[in-house]
Length: 112
Image 1 (cartoon, rainbow, N blue to C red):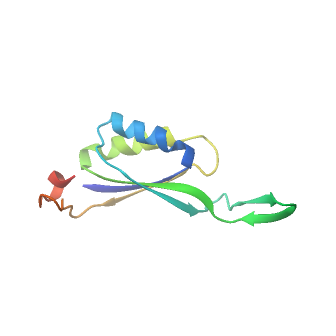
Image 2 (cartoon, helix red, strand yellow):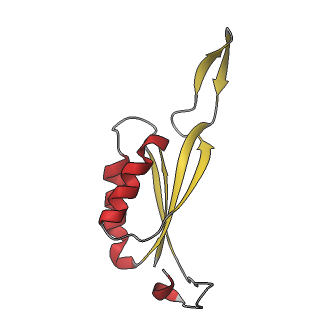
């Protein structure tokens, strides 16, 4: 099993969700987050005063998935989230040791 975390631009969330649904991903967790990478924020004008926005709004998508679907999920996220511009985001993949469904007590891949 793998745990995939993707940091994407907010307006790409629906595209990513649809792409994951098409390959059979049954559930995702989505969190609104803020951060910066190479973009390093930007300046904005508010009531005539200029200020720096260091942390940009992003979306964190988390998926627990079977090993067999992991590469497909990574490809789906990459294609759906890409704009070709700086700030498209990152995908992190780590091994998932155990998963347990609280309601039924199922473990491992059955719990996903």
